Length: 381
Image (cartoon, rainbow, N blue to C red; front, side, top):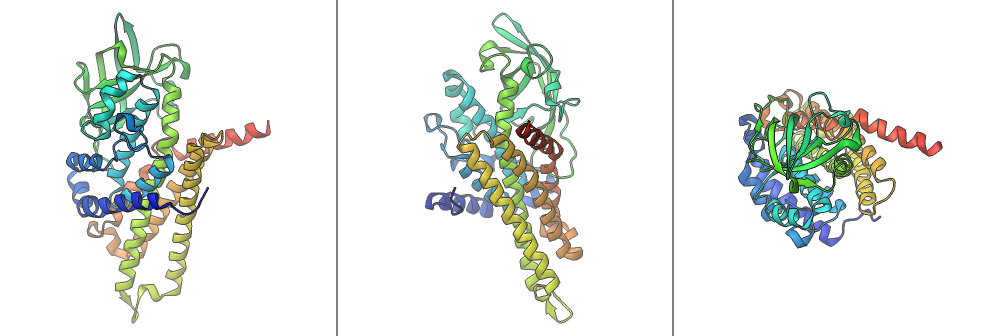
């Protein structure tokens, strides 16, 4: 593993940074305040190849690596962690269709998903099945050439605006082996959505319940085989976790950069804030912790690319470490602004609110600890 980006990776990063600077950052606070989901901006990202980052070129994807992806998501999050995180979720669905779908499913869905002409949502969590995702109760019953789905998914990003819903539903017995995955189009009769949730952050993307009431879909909408859904979901989450980790690093880096600019201009006791040694030490610690998190995420992404047996453990470790670190760095950046950091004008309080949820989604950080501890205990068994 090299600690230096290649020329191609630098070009990819710079492209994403330019998009973040020009299209996301100028609008981030307004989108947050108005709860505006900018579909046009997502389509512009799709035109740059960000809708199918690790989808094969055969179906319109960019065919990049997981390492390339975390570089992209860190860059995008410097403009707006909320939009970057939704793009990660969309890519998780597109990647799962590419990895596990049949030729017909790939040909139908992937070209428009890669262009972000169609948007996608990932539907695993339920009101009573969050961390214990294998306990989900949404059920799919085979009826001739169709499946009929009943149940409700909770906390679904993009719900109501997305065109495709990757739904995990129970086709068999209790537990993970009874779960299957289905591709459910937005126009399916019986599919509806709850109200847009009032949230602490992530306001620039909608979060709704996805409700399935006798929703009938063709049997061809089954992704892979019956009983494979939970395995697919967990494989998708490995990549999703390091993407969200990268989004935390990018958001925190933006907050740190804002703080550095502010400190170079704001004076107290006859000198600018960046001249005070105590504050310099804090900046040094924040930068060091971010660099450690970035290196860890790159390590996990490389393991995922190499299909290492340690990939799931490393992705869980990196997700826990980077999302905790990102939130703490952003929170410390707010403190460096003093009272001004609490105002919306500077955009730092928005970053703090956005990054807080990263410690919860894609598996809470407590679950990440559980994954890691089980791996460590098993290693000694």
